[in-house]
Length: 75
Image 1 (tube, rainbow, N blue to C red):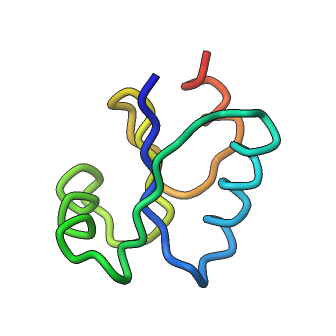
Image 2: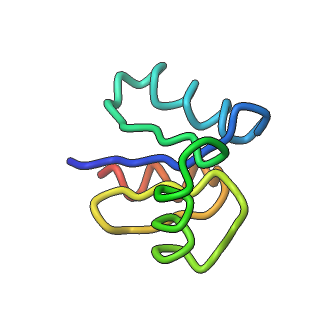
């Protein structure tokens, strides 16, 4: 399962998403879009959004940290 999260250091919901993944032993790749313009562009291309977090779970794009939706995508 491939999980990518686009985030920024100051984002509260990004921290909640990271905590959720860590507590559930879910491996993920994180990109700080405040420091990486290429990844920021990739995030906007995938989601159509500029807000974070954007979570990509096997191609399913979730904007924001919606825990029930993340849990469904992880099944």
